[in-house]
Image (cartoon, rainbow, N blue to C red; front, side):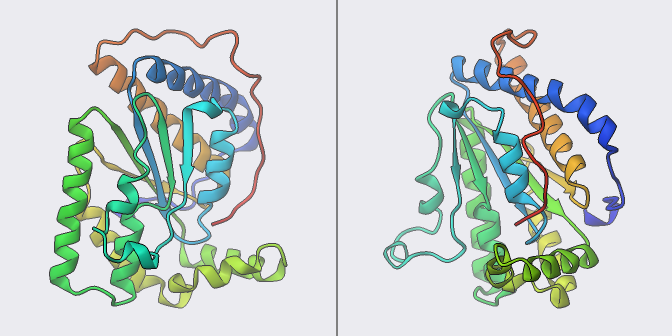
Length: 261
């Protein structure tokens, strides 16, 4: 899956500034329409440490209706009181209500990937948890949820460059410690594990979108286009009418740039 991703792709700033306002406005309209039609959705962001998940989510949500979504960051390791519960319990707790959006900055897929690369899980348990993920996602899709999964992909060289940038910035140096499991020196091992994970969790109703994340402008535009396409398809499938963006939508502009976790 990763071998076909062109990590050299970039989006010129002029093109970015031209298309961004319309895309933000369209997603806002679709969010409102899904809210009124009681269509819930889950947007899951996974990917390499330093691939820019956090900044992408920040720019994405800056033009959404804030009452219509919740952002969740579920830690890789279960807390003490969660150890006696089913491992997917932590994610079931954050499933959105009808019409709402739940955004996951790292999802259940990340949890399984971390356990494998840290050798905290054997092959039998790995397969069982893959089955759990499939059951979880199919159950939600069958119940009318729209699942959109992103994996932000960068090269070893780009990840190392961003790690070095973090280390030099006191405000970001903690990120290189948090992301220690994905040290660039072990990039190939993690890439193979991620490839295996994505292939085994690529489902008809919850496919993966692998986003080349070298250029932050391209990331945001591809994420917006994917969400717009998936939400429009869900509305059409349910026979819900939707039209042009509403005049009362908030003024659109670029809420910021940068790279991050």
